[in-house]
Length: 457
Image (cartoon, rainbow, N blue to C red; front, top):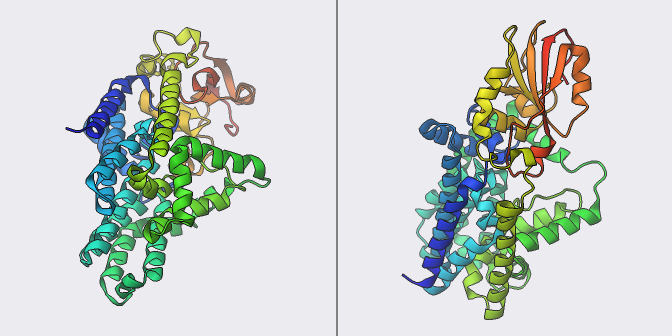
């Protein structure tokens, strides 16, 4: 076995050994909750992440290990697709190096441990890219059907996949030797396969007045901080993907002679770069833009490879060291931070009042998911806080009912609850732990007993 394969195996084993030190983050728990409320789509994203989580919970129950292993499996699948694609474009040795460099990039080294929609769309984008390369090299029309299915699954994972369709059309339009496909039926049948898989999402969106458009549009804000947003975008992208991959992507778009790599990189990078002044773009959102540069990274010059490896090691070692050794765990949780979440069902049972019904509330989507996952209870949000949760139904409190309210960074909530309930008290101890920002420090639990009436905030 050669060195790149040995190093990929070592990286994977290292991450397997660290799984227990990375508790479920809020976003993962929220997407797990989607799997308990199956639908054709959701306000934030299409439904693939929900379906995967439903399969995992059906097979393994509420298992953090299963979620972590699923994320790591996706990384290994993408690793293989990077290898296959680079081998088609270049040679085997380049492909092995590209596969290794993919595993070193911070977004996939550390971020690849978390099961979020962007992991799934990156998987299907990678598969689609490989199939497109095979189609172009072989000229075999059957690949259009495989490509159509892969793109359809990508669309079910994230709307970003629509950019792959646009990029494919642009490439075949500008590549003279490939224009003959516009006169063949296979591309159109492949597109029908994609749209057929995606049709339930379209129908769901139509029924709700295309709610996701307003959801994502609302993230742009009324008064964007253009300078801060631009600095955040270009700085974060350079950090998360390493300077050689980031600047290599820009080179592919504007300077490289390979039209396929240029179009597939530009189709994602340029739209996100254009909206970055008016929207705070998440670091992992444009991940698909970097697949061409990752596949070609095995061809980098030695100095660029040294920068990539050195930069990745510095960031990865620093990031993992922080979360393993220096994360500021609250003093009262030290020594039990990795067992406290498993005690949540017992805590909820013991503190539930004997009279009246008791409902569980949260003021944040991450807290909502974490309490539902660890506490094994249904958790609600006050009407209007989050559209997706509103769709799952809003409880109707009656006089004498109670709520246990998990709230992050909202101390004034206690005062808002007091006029509505006979008694309100605050849990003195911490009952939740993860390493997602300052959640352990900022989360409070309010017990409100004896509902008198009024709108729960």
